[in-house]
Image (cartoon, rainbow, N blue to C red):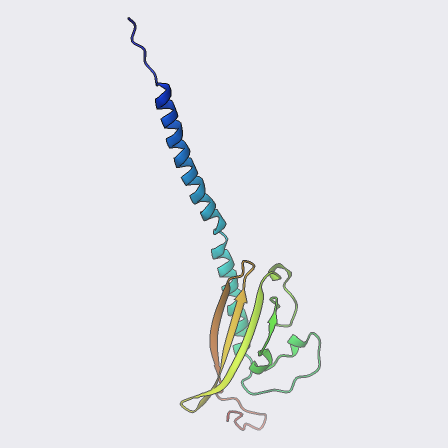
Length: 157
């Protein structure tokens, strides 16, 4: 009698089931990874937007300044308090919308002044909401230090 080599039907079915279970697990893991692959990019973009706004605001005067009438209104912001309550899609420092970032939203709040060892300070909170709905918030402080008027008198209380 001749000895035959090969797989039985039962062995073949068991192999197909095992490979099917492994493939399903792999595809589930890949789907989860792919679904979250843009999250770090969105977070990095939100961070860059928040840092840009916070830096722009912190560079403004601490004391309230008179605003000239101009358009767009944001181009006239000349002190920290002007940004209080700002909520918009990202714009550059002169108020021009950045079309590629229209899906993001920036919200700014300014609180204070609070006194730190006799130094006046405003707390600035910048929140950026990305297209996926996640919010990133940065906070900073703007203090009144060495600001003077045209005559050299201190503007800090």
